Length: 423
Image (cartoon, rainbow, N blue to C red; front, side, top):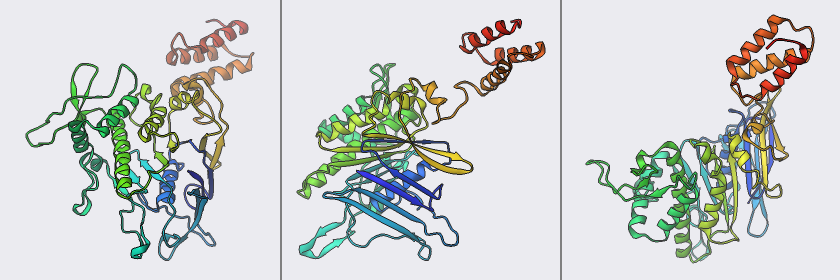
């Protein structure tokens, strides 16, 4: 498991330190404070590859940018500290065979996906042949289209892609297809909106592939390429989880070794494109899918997830365990990004999360309603000396932005009666 990440003079702040929880780590904060950057660096620390652009260091006299990290090894914790070499414009790495962090997956918000498999991407080790070198792909990096159509660098077939694999699995109706069906079922937004495969079909004369479909609640079978953005994101996650695990099992059998007992999943904006019903279930469903795929209780799964969703946080209240989970918040204070490990406590609903320090909204309403309420509360705090014109203007602003059933009206009307002002 990923235990610690330290950033010194790299990223959004002079220093950031994470001591990660063993199961779920939720990373929150405003846009532009470095949440995705944290996942990018975490991926590099675990795999020694960059999923996108390498992290750029801070520059200045006397600065020594550094990334330090620690994760569990097979026998003891593995740690390393990498300094930035300005002459080579790269982050230094320890020579020799790197430590093995277990399986690492990274789902990015743009639809790209990265996989590091200890059976397929780890350095080949054959002491009898004098081989201990990086002669395997350093990682599998999919752009959004390659997830669907396949990963084939330099003519090598590394992955057939969602469309071809799904059709092939469905035709054989073996374990991969059954796992895909189970994953889609578990990741469905509700029992009445199930993600269920339909019959294979063709979509045009120019495309001879057998195209997977999804059965809809209105009786049609829709080709997956025409599915909604939310459905496409979820079926992509389901497919890549099944594909990654199945290929890992195949590679482990060929190498006559045991499957990994550790999976680290990095997810950027897990709720992206998802309806609120889906936001309420997606993260817990992913945990269930990964547990079901591995089929063993001794496989440790750790998630680092970036989220902007108050509903997702509210949905985790019954599941969150402070012994295994953590909530991290990146906040802008006095023009500096500050990291806090927030104390978890139940807030009850999404509105309460919206006005908490995590999202820091004044009101869970429209901007106009928030401004009208703030104006009204300023009058209410004065208690006396409120003119009729001030009262009328504040009341009209409230009427223009609040519905008649809004609970704020109770406070306003009580105050108005006490103050002797007309409604």
